Length: 86
View 1: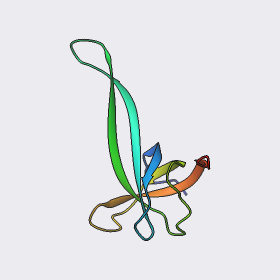
View 2: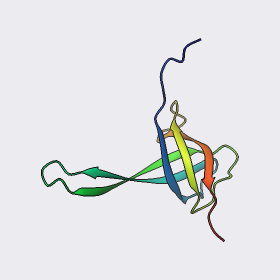
View 3: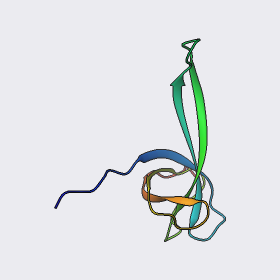
View 4: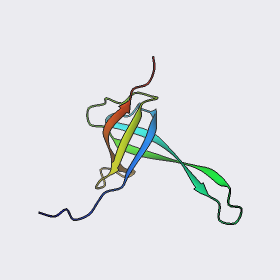
């Protein structure tokens, strides 16, 4: 059976985990400016579903797109790539 579509995946850092089953993930990426051709750092924050509350502040995580879980949650934490120090 063929998969209907591929989901987007991002890698970022957990910056807030005070909510129940939800984490706030900061994703940074480099894009090239259109006219100046200089690389510019862009940042975005995503609310991601963390059903077992495993993520801690500073963890590096991988998230993927999902169906809408709440008003602002459209991403899910897939795995923790690197745990925070301390």
